[in-house]
Length: 216
Image (tube, rainbow, N blue to C red):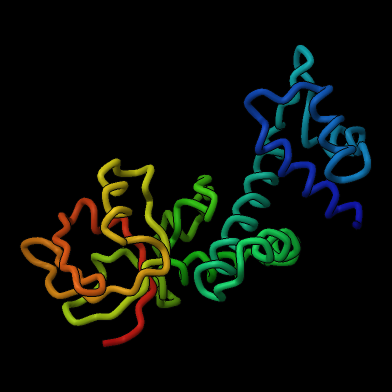
C-alpha cells in the first residue's frame, strides 16, 4: 500500500471514530488495519492534532477525510445498486475505487445515483457540491419513487428507513431492496404493485423509497 493510500485509509479510520478517538485507540487501529503506525505522518501533514489525549482533525484533515469517506460510500452504492456486485466484493472493491475516483467522476456517480444520503450500511454520505446545486447534467438512474410515472416498472434499490419510521412497515409487505414494482397511480396517493399486492403510499413515504427505473 502506497504512503498516500495509507494516509487516506488512516483518515477514514479517524472519521469513523472522530467523536471518541483516543491516542491509544488510534495507534491500535492503525497497526491492525494498515499494518503500520503512521501517526507521525498524520501529524506532519497537518491532518490531526492531540488535545487531552484525544485525536482531533485540523480543518485540512477533516476536509480531506470527508472527501475520502464520500468517495468510498458512493463507490459502495454504485457497486451494489447499479453494478449489482455482492456485498462482500462491494466492500473490497469500494476501498480500491475510493483512492482513484476523481472529483468529476465522484460528482457524476452521485448525480447518476440520485444524490444518495446513505451508504448500503446505513451510514451518512457527506453531501458534495453537486448535491447542494442539485445538478442534472447526467440523468439519474436511481431516483425516488415519486419521480416515476404511472405504468413505470422499477426495482427497489434502497429505503431511507432511518428518515421515516413508517418505512419499517414496508418490509413486512415485501417492499425491500431488489423487489420489482409497478407504479399504477401517483395522485392523490402513490399506488404500487408488488407481485399480486397493491400498496397505497403517502408522498412523504414514497419519496424515501429509491428505485432503479426499468422502462414501461
